[in-house]
Image 1: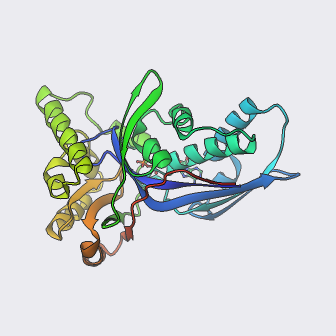
Image 2: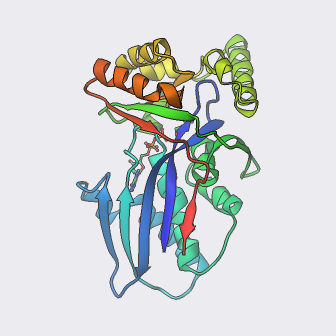
Amino acid sequence: MTISVPATSANLGPGFDTLGLAVDLRNRVEFHPSKFFSVSIKGEGENNPRLKGNNLFISIFNDHYSRLIKNKQNFKFTFYNQIPMSRGLGSSSAVIVSAIASAHEAAGIRVSKRRILNHALVYESHPDNITPAVMGGFNVATVEKNKVFSQKKHLPDYLKAVVVIPNKQMNTSKSRTVLPKSYSKENAVYNLSHAALTVAAFFNEDWEMLKLAAQDRFHQKARMKTLPELFSVQKVAYESGALMSTLSGSGSTFFSLVYDEDSAMIANRMKQKFPDFNVKVLNFDNDGLIIER
Ligand SMILES: Nc1ncnc2c1ncn2[C@@H]1O[C@H](COP(=O)(O)OP(=O)(O)OP(=O)(O)O)[C@@H](O)[C@H]1O
Ligand SMILES: N[C@@H](CCO)C(=O)O
């Protein structure tokens, strides 16, 4: 059985803990019953011995598998990881979603994407990464009574993502500690109106509106100050024609949405200006979680 889940870019400027989209960079896990438990990792994390033992995937898989089925069975897992860890591209969501989906598949239980998403909420309380990880596309999501309520918009293939990935990791829980404890009414209204405009611009495909809409007063500045080169990344992205350019999730990656025809030029400029950062042009992903039986 093979399960794969895409990377995600959350917040999208003003949509803190609310907006997110999926990009075509996937973590894939293959597994089958085996006499002995074993884990092998290829790609991101392959040189991290900690991941072979006490792995977030394995603990969530075990939680669900033991809940779903009485018989104990060992599995051989092979991970093919493309999503860099703690860089704001939803690596933890991909692991959480793939572990829950894998446990259900291993137990022979078919379950809807919506159920998987609601289970994922137990491990990541904000829905902005887990929702696009499961559903694909652009999503607006909220949580009520421990359930995710979301709306999805497919993203057209004439748009691309340019991601600039610094070497520096930014752990989400640590990156949340630099945020203000409260916001003024003025700033709350600013973010509310800009997030609403961002959603409307995505659904109406008014891409030129995004640059104005995607401005934020909640989280970006405080986080970008911990890696000040990110201010230059955003400036160069906009000067080069990006339609929106925002801190991806809790950082450290910077995400830009661009027209396909501009993507190579914008990526090349980023590579020249920021030679120490990893620059990638990615397609958007409209599939989310994929289960191959
Ligand atoms: N491939 C993986 N295998 C096992 N655990 C992983 C894997 N990828 C990520 N993790 C776990 O998720 C943690 C990273 O989560 P964190 O929320 O800090 O970053 P992120 O999800 O990449 O960023 P963001 O939520 O801002 O998009 C890692 O420290 C590790 O515990
Ligand atoms: N909304 C989350 C995304 C990262 O998981 C944050 O900004 O902390």
